[in-house]
Amino acid sequence: MKRSIKKSLSFSNKGTSLFTLTATSALLALSSLPAHASGEVNVYSARSEALIAPLLETFSKENNVKVNLITGSADALLSRLQSEGSASPADVFITVDAGRLYRAKEAGVLQPFETAHLDKAVPEHLHDRDGYWYGLSQRARVIFYNPEKVSADSLSTYEDLADPKWKGQICIRSSSNIYNQSLVASMIDAKGEAATLEWIKGLVANFARPPAGGDTDQIKAAAAGVCNIAVANTYYFGRLGSSDKAEDRAVFEKLNMFWPNQASGERGAHVNVSGIGITTASKNTDNAKQLIEFLTSTESQEWYAHVNNEYPVVEGVAPPASLAKFGEFKSDNVSLSVLGENNRQAVKLMDQGGWK
Ligand code: FE
Image (cartoon, rainbow, N blue to C red; front, side):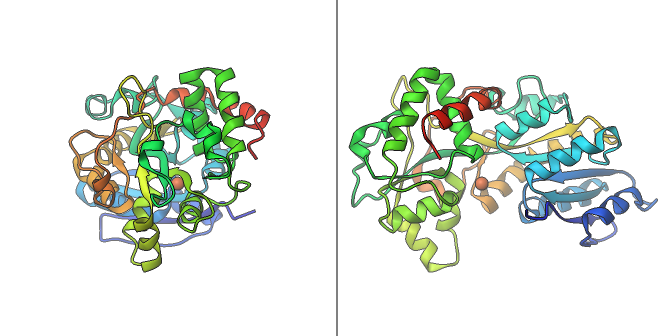
């Protein structure tokens, strides 16, 4: 097992102070905050430090609020929130995928909230229907293809990937991955369980190889000729395109990105979010709300697009430059709450359909 809680770092408004601590001492640090802090907010983040710390630092400086950050794996942090209960020092929990955000809601570690800004800024389908969590950044799960082997005209929908014409040509990671579970959950919503099971069977029959590795591995496999089509999240492709490694950029140049289900009457490309909720145990809810409003400000949304190649959740903010050439797309606007609600069923169907 990987060590779950990697480190904690702290920003104070008296210049930046960073320190790395073990899981045990991190709790001590959180409970021995300096008296001069005008306020504080404690963040548990399943997103890596590089993807959140700079934003927290800016928030801290602009608002004179001390921010304490603990990063760890999504599952480990959720377990920790559950075991700490009302004694948890955490005010907010950040994680990726609506399926995981739903688990946190169901586990009772989040509380509902709303603010006038969030109501306006975050579209209805990108936050929990009861206000337990809000999307911070958006990504689509789409099709990448080798244009030397596959013509764009032959691609259309997720459903079509189960057509026997794609036999032996598709790379996608395992069914244990939450991104795939959420994709299947959206299919259940759109097509029903029986049709989704048939789709899974057809898709599995078209696999180029047994699922292995992460999304980037699927994209690289398509570029290397292991398969002609890969299914992966948009930001992994953007990351390759903006990499300083020539071999990454070569992968990006070799492939094309295809937006599925765009025709009129189709539901649009499947999207998901990284998101945030206020914990049930929060003792600094005003600061937590202020932080969440900051993370959904234009400034922060531009940062997400620029640094992590993600699409903003807030309208009017430019998409990531690395993916700009692929243009705008229609997204499936089903409430992302559905992805969590259908998760159990999705996992069952993937198992039945032989998706390893
Ligand atoms: Fe990811």
